[in-house]
Amino acid sequence: MSPGSSLPQRFPYRLVATDLDGTLLRGDGTISQRTRDALAAAQAAGAEHLVATGRSVAWTRDILRALGYRGIAVCGQGAQLYHAGEDRLLTSVTLDRAVARRAVELLEDALGPLGVAAAADGVDGEIRMDGRFQPVEAQNLTDEVGGPREGVPDREGLFADPVIKLYLQHGVLGDDALAVAARERLGGVVDFVVSGPSLVEMLPLGLSKATGLSLAARRLGVRAADTIAFGDMPNDLSMLGWAAHGVAMGNAHPEVLAVADEVTGSNDEDGIATVIEALLEPSV
Image (cartoon, rainbow, N blue to C red; front, side, top):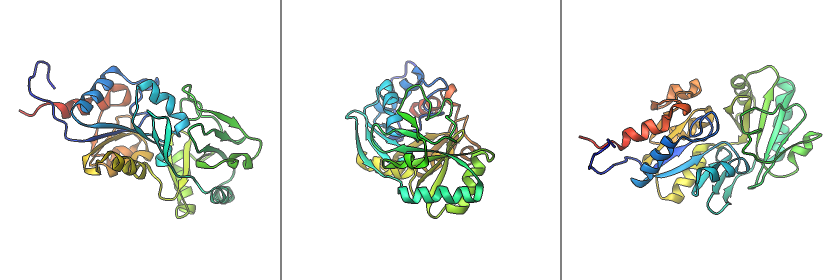
């Protein structure tokens, strides 16, 4: 809304869904005051803000606390619905461990050795990494805002508790190539998505941010037609496609840029705020 305007602000959506890394958060892991103000203005105009992240709850809760976020969050690529204000899981979907073990074996037979990590279920779920998995700087698995993690001496240790997803790395294949190769071989058994540099994830078949967002929206009494969504990586494609209007950040993966309804500035350029501020401008 322009300074000094006396016209009431309007906002055409009832739900603003945002990814975290590369979208809501800047490169230094913070959220700008401009973006905070824009989201607060959208909420004052009647919209809900909902975080939808690939991070498991254990790797999200401290960030949400720092943001002052107290609502429902979609975590773990849609596997977990988490109520931040109450610090509890509302729903959770796990990856069948026998299927996951066999899927890793089949992929290694076809592609060679993989580095594997597993995200355990629960609000305190650890991320366990085998000896080949290389921790990823500035990403989910080594973030300073911390969730619990540990190395395990053998693969069985990855599956000691229920897991929501696996992370896969290949010594030669890049992220996109690994995801494509994995889908070609096992796409009807489990799902695969690229969520960040050196992070290819194995998920339960049919699970995505869109499924988690749909469940959260139902709890909030809103629909896809009421939603605008922001994201940057291929794991956000389902969410952007589900929403009435999908916005790619300027720093987004080429696949996301190619299909988004709109491209805004990068996460370091207040791309979310730019779009929200324009939507709040009164029509003349």
